[in-house]
Amino acid sequence: MTTTTAVERPVITPASRKADPAQPSVLRKLAPPVVVAVVAVALWWIAALLVNSLIFPTPAEAMHSLADDLGKAEFRANVLDSLRILVLGYVASTIAGTLLGLALGVSAFWTRAILPIFYSVNSIPKIVLYPIFLSFLGIGELSRAGFTFYAAFVPMFLVAVESTAAVQQIHLKMAASLQVGWPRLIRQIVIPSALPALATGMRMTFGLAFLGLLLAEMFSSSSGIGYELLRNVSLVRMENIMGTVVLIMVMALPPTIALQWLEHRVTAKYGG
Image 1 (tube, one colour):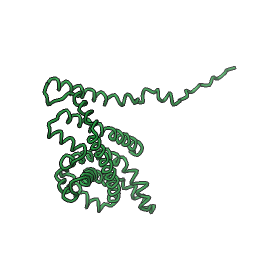
Image 2 (cartoon, one colour):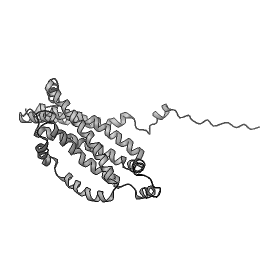
Image 3 (cartoon, helix red, strand yellow):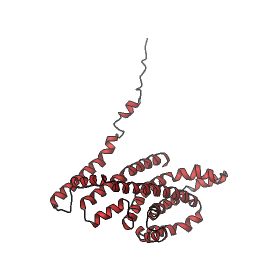
Image 4 (cartoon, helix red, strand yellow):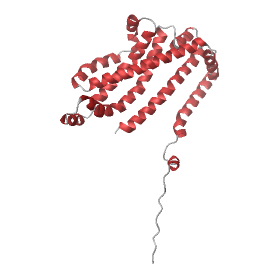
């Protein structure tokens, strides 16, 4: 008499999935940028020690000056003012650029008619057009917000139009044969196809919006972190300059990481 032994299959639990060495851990993902940051700080410190100049501060001196600046209420108010305008300008430019780009990108005629104009505008250095904003919006918060919006709106609009125009024609023809209405066409075909490119555009335009804000504050403003940076430059306070630069990098890092994470998630879900 023969007996058969049932083969036990291994049970895959959430704990075993986490222990899978093939899946990259959070530590492994964070290790490369942390190593690069440590190496950059070390090179900065070595260069400052080798130059041994009064105008080239060490990282410790820059951080000490930044701590002193952050202890001042006026400096903190300028930083918060820049953050507020940056968020408003970036969000408005992202929404407006995406909606207008999706609306125009579904029309081949308007795509051919408008894209060359916007590409020409986008090729002009941003700072060249800033006097126009000053002329119409004046020196103050409105011109800073307007220039921040413009710096991110044009590239976001171009990304939205290009991604919408790149939707596969077979999908559009199938929708036309099924007599799919425009709202459903946009919602179920155009937007899912364009989402990966739109997520990439959101990540790229954040830096452009921040750059536009800093340029506006440096050239014609009495507040903001760009104003603080230009004032330190005029007074040749290198410790404060380097500290402010580090602060700007720290301010830009969390949104950039979040937008990069969003881009990866959207691309993984809709990229195929």
